[in-house]
Length: 429
Ligand code: AMP
Image (cartoon, rainbow, N blue to C red):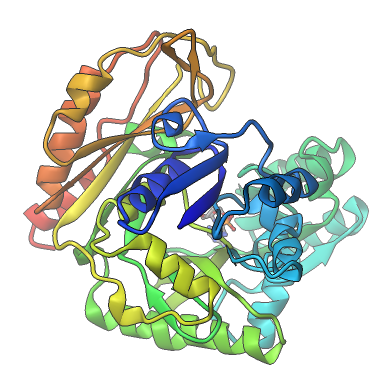
């Protein structure tokens, strides 16, 4: 089988890494890929969001299967273009990707199908209308830009002044671009967050192993939000009873809702949940695997990923084929100094060989590039040091030992990935 993977971050490196382990895979291309993916696949310098360029590439290389990593190609209609040509592809349609591409679309979908979520106070196209409603609400409230805003479109507003400032920046000064033209206002939920990710062919689905990510840049959840500073996966994150509640109150109504609305969905569906006192509530949908959750999840696969993804594309997913390694996995993200603010790229990366000699460790590349044989940093999130082991504690020890072998100027990483889970266990909670 020849496979094309779209995207160029840590998630796509994890996909390429696992696809390559399949005995039926003969060749992998990745567009655009990165400095680490280049060791496992042929990288093609094309933007994954450029639908016509990707179609032209696929016409030339004729992959047997295409796997879409990030949201942009999905929201831009890439899978529709492929399916019209009867090409095998994993990823939801442009219409289905609106679950992620438009918060208003997704909220209306949730409400229509009575799937538990935060109450919506309204959706607004005009800032003046919004200020009027804001002045009548009790704070805190959550303000969400409708469209894709690279993770910057959600604001938990503590009071009117802060809320007005955010709306001004997003709607009047267009600081987040076209994604901020329309804004949604909703109630604030309290609880622990959990990501629940499924793989579906539209009819059957398989839940992936549970994960939790760490979004803030500094230890103890301090500092600004990032694309993700690390993640871990352990079955203990999701007791059986909670899994059943999520399946029956969220996952199944969602798949039935999509079918009722005549929106076929094939691929990964990421459901961001808040576990409130009155049960799980949907915070958001993503129409793809999370990053860095994918790195921790895929490190635990004990099945042929290429075979399973071909089954999804051919409408014949057999959920019983998804076997997982017992134990746990952890991914520690190494970033450029200053990220998520201003940072410098082009720093030489050392120590990867000794990091990868540690049992169970795989260093997945996100922002790296090769230049004259040297590996250089090329982005905010640079590497995802990923380890699988028989317990979370052991996975964390391996990942941190590997991280300590790697150096580049300005390197930063959190020292407390997964710490909350291990503390809970130590206290018998
Ligand atoms: P979203 O992109 O909608 O998941 O929002 C990003 C983050 O904002 C979530 O992971 C939560 O931490 C937070 N968030 C979103 N909606 C709410 C809500 N209604 N109540 C509390 N926190 C929220």
